Amino acid sequence: MDTTLNVSSTDLGERERSTASLLKWLSHDSAVRRHCRPAPVYAPPAAGAMGSALEAISLVIGNVTALGSLAMAVDAWRRGRTGLLPATTVRISGGGTTVALDGASPRQVAEIARILGIPDVPEETGPTPRTGATATADTAEAPGAAEAADPVEALGTADTSRTAAGSGTA
Image 1: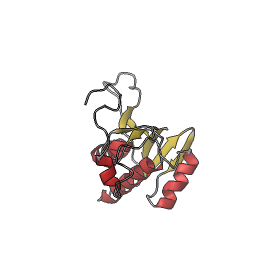
Image 2 (image 1 turned 120 degrees about the horizontal axis):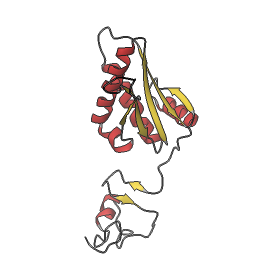
Image 3 (image 1 turned 135 degrees about the vertical axis):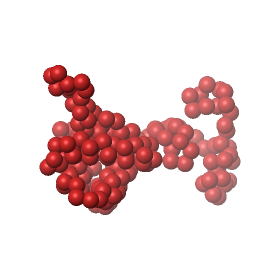
């Protein structure tokens, strides 16, 4: 699901600085980069302006795991901010709905996922958590996988003579 993070603040200049700070934080978080791929969203330039202001952060959230990674990163960013900064609120928008991103507890993440309509299970294809290779809906067992008691050993017995695209080359 295409979503947008908006940071609001009582200080207009702080809103842009906070949005830039959060974008940098999310871009350095490996779980967020892997699951959500944050990107800047710029406001249209004002008449006579030389550039445009950073307005929001765009993300694609595929499932509740990705949303959980995002919520934990936003929570850590918020806790890491110190000093006398104006209060900021982070809101996530998707599918015509906007929700405040106030915490990262499993209950809060599940509620936000329910409100936004984000599925709670990964799609049938996508990166696997262990290797980063593309998983497919093919359920055929690899030779020798049934005999291996340890699932990690079963992974090592797969035929690696073809690529995920099926080109026949390793």
